[in-house]
Amino acid sequence: MEFKRARRPEQVEQRRRTILDTACAMLRERPVADISLRELSDRVGLAKSNVLRYFDSREAIFLEVLDQEWGAWLDEVEEAPAPVGEVEAVATVVATSLLRRRLLCELISGMAGVLERNISVDFARVFKRRAHEHTARLADLVRARVPVLDEAAALHFARAVLVMTAGLWPHANPTEAVAQVMRELGGSTAAELVREGLTEGLVNQLVGLVARA
Image (cartoon, helix red, strand yellow):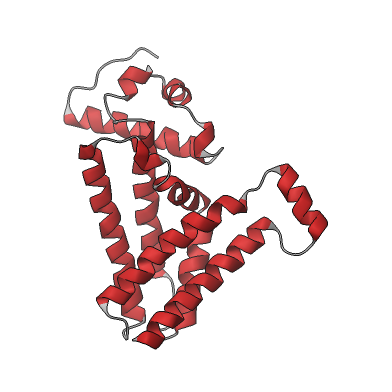
């Protein structure tokens, strides 16, 4: 594909959209760690230097995808049925809806330790502001269904969702060697352990916050 520089704002936005859509498609095929900027650029049909005209870095592209996935998940949470005051049901809705979004979970798990390590101050300022807005939105959604919580407690829960997901998700996709040993040991699979751990962890977190309130 012959590269033609996007000059008008709508052309720039279209080029950015193409890059993000391509990154999202690749992330649904394999993990973040397995995707290089060169591969992504080749799939888009641009040189690496041209991709970097639109984004700070490979990591910035993936953080933009995370931002999109985060917002889409919160839309789902907002629409999900969960009776007001049913604390365990609210926490379970959050956990189960999140676990259905494999890409979101993977990007959350790599956010602080990997993806935020190679971005500029300007991009970090924009991304962290959006992340704060997403966290605050989840806190508001939880408070609407668990009115006994104050703002600080709801924010604590929303942040705990990120921390638990980041900690548990890497265990959901073990290597074949580890999976074989887990089968030999018996019991739950890695995916089941992550699902049970996140659901139980969020239920306990929310129940505890309600008890303190």
